[in-house]
Length: 180
Image (cartoon, rainbow, N blue to C red; front, side, top):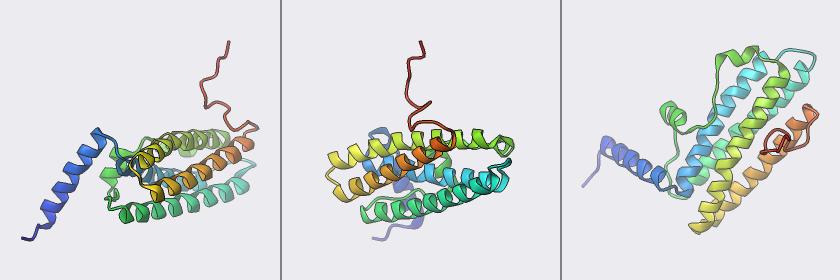
C-alpha cells in the first residue's frame, strides 16, 4: 500500500505535534533550525543597513556570522535527516518554531543596539541547544549530542566576540544579576 503525499505530510504534522508536547531531541533541534533561519534573516538585514563609524567592520562581522548561521542550519538539517527526523522547511514552520523576533524597524537601530540584540538572540538560541543536548544524551543519540555541543561552543564564542564589541564581559546583561 502506497501512502500519498498528503497522508505523509499529515502524519508528519501529527508526529510534530506529539514531539513538541513531549519534547524530544529532534523536536528541540527543529526549534534550533527555525532560530537559525530567523537569525540569518536578521543578520542579512543588519549587514545591509548598519550605520555609523563601525559600519565596515560590522558588515564584515555580520557577513561572517551569516555564513556561519547558514552553514550551521544546513549541517543541522543534514544531521537531523541522518537521525531519521523531519527538518522544518517552510516559512510557516520557521515562524511557528522560532523564539527569535525580527522587525523591519530594526534596520533603523544603532549599531550597538543591533550587536546587543544579536547577543540576546544567541543566548536565547542556546537555551534550545542546551536542552537538545540533554535530550539527545537521554535518548542515546551521541552523534546529535556531539554536533549540538559543537554548535553551543560556536555560539558561546560568538557571544564573547559580540560582547567585546560592546565593551562587555561574556555574560553582561544576560544572567539574572542582583542589581541591589
